[in-house]
Image (tube, rainbow, N blue to C red):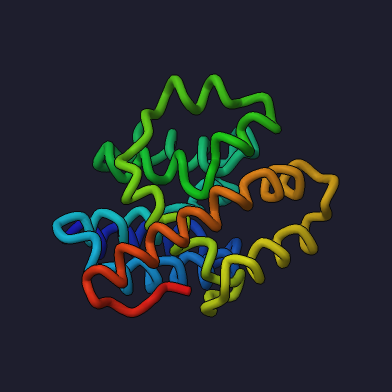
Length: 188
């Protein structure tokens, strides 16, 4: 079984029943990651695997800290022995260091998991932040607004996502430029 096939199977087993909407979102994020293939080259499969696995830390069966990037990355590393690069992408997806800081977990996240290549980090940010909770395509601005509305502006997630917004928009611009340079479709 290849990396992506395995990743889909694991993510489905952990999310589809307890968190069907999270599973739909993960499928949408993986589809967006596929669309960025022209700028990913040999890392396309790696990014797609990370995309479908990025939210496994929400699974009630493995949630320990309540911070899904850290819980998911630890599970993938310690229980599943997943490729280190996939684990790093899951650990740091969508500006996770900023949310970790809000939760008092930044030191743990950054000392346990190194950052992955910036181009892949950007691609995963764009994949996540252009996908609705139901797995549909959206814009980064609409996605950010949706997150703030869902969680509230004064919650941990609301504060973090507002702080992360400039980096999310910058990542989207960098990905758009790379896609344009290779003649690929724009991610939004």
